[in-house]
Length: 337
Image (cartoon, rainbow, N blue to C red; front, side, top):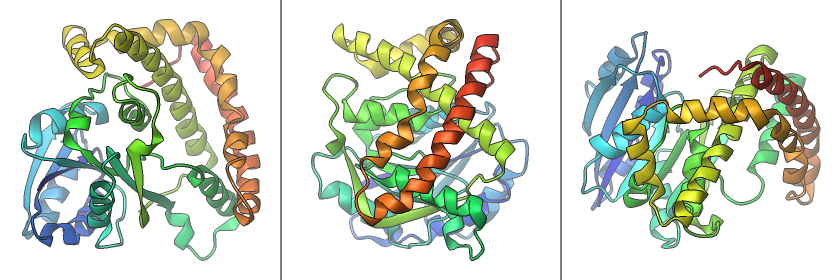
């Protein structure tokens, strides 16, 4: 089986070396019958990300390639890896960010096994864990952040763009338009509906039990507010895209092919749609996002419910403040990508 791994990096000179260090220690590289190739796609970096990646891989035994793209865009880097760089013979593609830690050396092989053992699944995911979980002194904000994470982890598997692997044909049926602020939400929607041609089937995702990766939590209020506002506006933009995709699927068109052709003929089409539509009705729809933590809390049982409750209340307050800020931005046409 041929597996292609793509690590998408932008201004990560301080972290990419550690991430690559974890990656090349994975036992996936020595699994019998597995031929794995690593691609590092540096996009629009203004620091030494490219050089740090080359240094980290200088002595690596695995087959690897480091490429640099001028455009600073995760969506463009994703499209480039999936549709141009990855081997046509690859059966599985692995996507990961350049600023995470993968402490378990068998993480990727266990995720691959989970996918192989679940024929119905199109993608395998692990559990994202905030680095706060390993700190001794977490503080009130840290404890609330971890409580909110437990809330988000409840229910069926979720696709996190920081790390996942998927069957190559399923990803090659997807194309990401620009600007894509919350790409994992759109990728998940495409996978669980088979390109919006079928009802949602969450069984298309499988979680590799006990497998996790670490990521840096945002705990300072200013950066957290801006991060969450960006996610909220990106989620609303995805809703626009979902409506477009449903219409295309009803017409018998392949959504991924249409998005690719449309982006080639008019690269700004999605940006224009966002500006026209979100400025008109985005503020009105923001309210539906506020009670999401309460809906997630209903999926928790027993002790998990009580551990997640403080996080749910904190998220409810945060969502309300973020929604207000996002509504003001949309009303004034302040959309930044």
